[in-house]
Length: 150
Image (cartoon, rainbow, N blue to C red; front, top):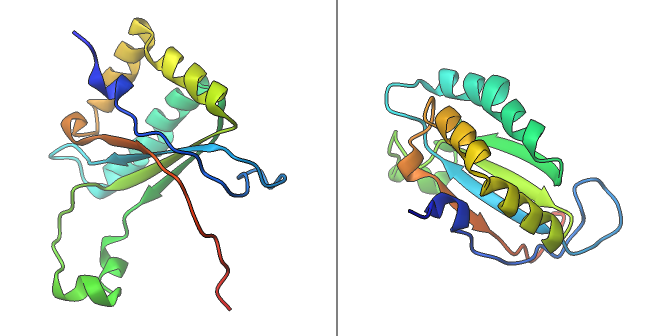
């Protein structure tokens, strides 16, 4: 059986500054939308992700340029006018991870490493501790427009 979580990627290129602050150059950016496992509080989710899962992933993927986790702020999201009228306490995701790669070769190395059966089993077992693995969504995005507001 093919593990579709390893092979399900939409590919595009980010065309703006690299996260390490070097010159502008094309790079790859993977977004991962994660939903916490039922019964796991928001605080437990974040604590586990930061103290256990992120270090596990970082230790296996040296080809990743940057791995940033973003957590939904449910209370402050109410302050965004559009969400006030339609506020729903639960969403389809609790965090968005951004994974940056220098180039396609780095992404391919990441994808190849992710396909290793032993590593995939280790990562998947860890994901099952705190994530609803059926809800994980991964997309490579193209960023267009990066304008400072004055």
